Image (cartoon, rainbow, N blue to C red):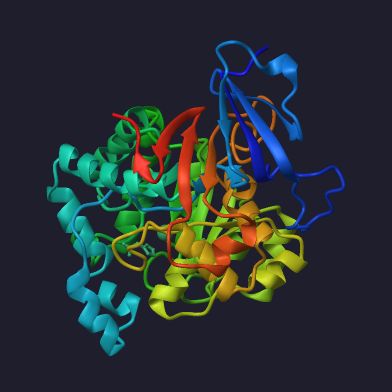
Length: 420
Ligand code: IZC
Ligand code: ZN
């Protein structure tokens, strides 16, 4: 077969393919090729390798592109976002600066509940347009797949509105959007005096959401004064019965035992983990739960970083994502999250790329089609305008992405949107 498109003269090709020698927890274990080529046919990877492009894959129609020794990686996967919402919360910034904690703002009816009020009022078109613009920026940062949670409706009608918006974004934007139901994101104001009643309401919503086919995962905010471990277990067990795959916002601010619950229920991933206990680390490890860490949130809240080195040493699979949301992390720049992981958590460039490619693919259950550049997988890839991988982390705070290809189509060209 001939390639439709072949990039050649790639200085560094990070394939993110895990090598056979893989030992548990070896976060450096990916293939990196120098002086490489990457061939695409019908939106998928046709071939890749080192040195000269084989003549057998070059046809008359093949578009040959000189990569000028730049760095090419798989498309980045942002595996934890609260993409679809309305309004913003900069009015809470003075409180935050004065030291009012995130959960304190929520307790007073602000925080998530403020975004719920705005999202309930918004039209589907408004939600779509706001999120679409954010997806454009994410794409320019090298992101080709995004997980997107609901959770600003807290009633069936608005949760469905958010989830339908996910679907519409997935159908209309080059980025693939993977949808998660987060009905248990907070207790809504109308259930303030009856939190158990809201737990029952979420459980009532589960089969309806499942039936609608609008969400693949079910997530919960298991946190002090939000949903405790017992309530989280109750909701997630019901979600499992409805065949949702599970995620848990676990031990973000207070060490409640969310990681232990993620292990107990064999969740796909546990998110945040800034306050995870040693027992929680053991349980994630024993049950093969992915630790999805969100360095931008620790940075923005001025909180501890998740103990990533401890988790890696125990053999846990680590993913990194933005947590893009209007409260704890209003930032859609995955490269900034990666820079923070480097400077503050001391992860290596290879560990970080693995965390936003193949490990992030596992966190969204897509490791068979994306997350690495291997023959037959989708040709989602990014050209970074740098000479080596280290440079991305050394010269931080700017966007190093030059081109982004989604299924072989160049959707970002020289940093600009290239589709209509
Ligand atoms: O809107 O504050 N942590 N949920 C759990 C969030 C942050 C999103 C928000
Ligand atoms: Zn979150």
